[in-house]
Image 1 (cartoon, rainbow, N blue to C red):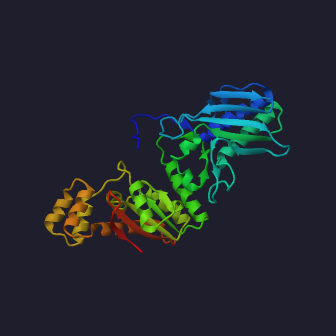
Image 2: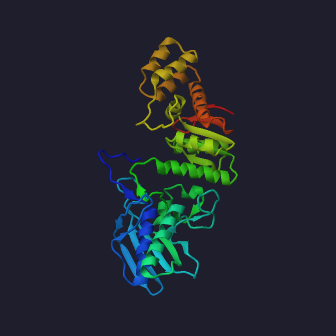
Image 3: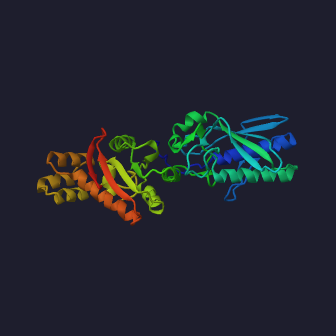
Length: 362
């Protein structure tokens, strides 16, 4: 995990914006023999940033331009990656045809914004590149019929640090972005990945998915239910992002898996489980122990505890199923968000070694 720095944060540019700038520069050179540097593009919200070229090459049949991605102060895995576009003449009337070059993935499963067999270049970046090609064609006398091949240096290795392998995107990274702008430390990219995971599971007939708060709980829930990779959603702290999307796009069954502290916060009603935005309420845990019949001394010790694990250990020593009760409260909170959409929910709590500590639901 990377801590958010203090003070104002610098915004950056998406992979799609970089690919668009490289495509515009390459097509301009293909038609005129000269690369614009820097090259200015139009983003969906009207901004007109200019990008310096890091690489360019021209021969009679193709032009290639490269832009180094600057993600600003966001800890983006693709920050500093070289995004390349090679533009070649295409068949007459063919418009813009996209190809995946080295480091850009190919979609192999249904449920993503582009169909199987296509390069993993999302719809908005495609539209940005089509618009850039049309602009150059109009100003430089081109037909606009081109083949655009996008590559990302070292993209196949970088993709292993993303959701792409799990989503069925093979061979590299995706070209993403809906605004062209990277907002530092935004939750949107993670939540977007959760949504795409649900879409892919639905499209591939997966009826039971598991949203996990971390890697230990993910591996534990995989073992518990024998779930395939396609069913595993890296929920992290974004329980609300998962549940609200499932309410609109339901599946038959959801398992929520996590450690005791995170599940306690969900049980308290928090949908954002990040430590900076929600805290374990020890008075609430003490009330749960009292509900289970704990004596006054144990309740008082829980009230003054330092960590959620300390409370769980006290309950275990007293033979009280606190994790089960907390899981039941978390399940009720999840069902409240799902609002009768038809998704069945169970909650499992794991200890730090992946052992089952408590559960609630079918």
